[in-house]
Length: 339
Ligand code: TRP
Image (cartoon, rainbow, N blue to C red; front, side, top):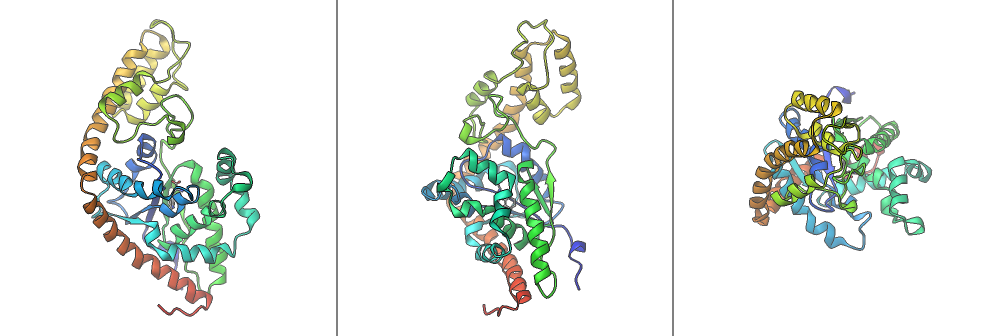
């Protein structure tokens, strides 16, 4: 019997194409993907089907953002010769595995998933909860297992998905003539959640507190200028608080020189360092980070034909790979594999 745990690592990550990607995505995941892509085989899934689970009546919103996300990926340095970028709706094996897994997961188990529970509340679905939304963690388990992913770089809100995936792996493997599905583990980024520029705990498009990767120089300037600091820090000479101060959270996430940030923090705490100076340091590193990304992104999005061709190429490779898993599961269940 093959020992699935001894196979080389495979990485899968994904994003719902609900809008352009922003700085929260960058620190939480994109940056890490760029670093990981030369270490292990990496698949990146544009999860349009998952995006539709709470946008069923606005398919154009999802469809129109597929290539926007593709452009974001390439602009931050995800390299198609290292990372396979693919489209969820182009991979029927994912949908078929979802159908098979749905039979071994109870309704009460999906209802217990804390992330889904939260989202259902926040979105105020009540009785109008789409069935697809309730079961999206099962579809995500299908994504992860179809690729044989062992490492899944995600934010901490996705930990319940990983847990649920491993439960499905265990249950399904026990039903198969020999184990096929691989257990996975989350790879948490050191900065897993970037607060919004308004100080809200999460940067999120629906809260309108994001900086997208295509933000202009002026937008970056304004965002940093309006950023929440320490409301008690009235005079420069006053001691200031670093905890909960968004400018310092961002300096931690983006400033290349950690020692310099530590020195600034000490100075700020002691008193004598003004908010304006901290903001200038932050703006400088954000402008330096985003300028080349913005330029590359502009070039990419100007040639949608080329973006689509790359996505098709990646999806073809992913199709073969995921189809193999589906076939192995079908065979393991004793179902005839015809095509
Ligand atoms: N749920 C993820 C998000 O909201 C997107 C996603 C879909 C995903 N399928 C995945 C992430 C598989 C990792 C692995 O961003």
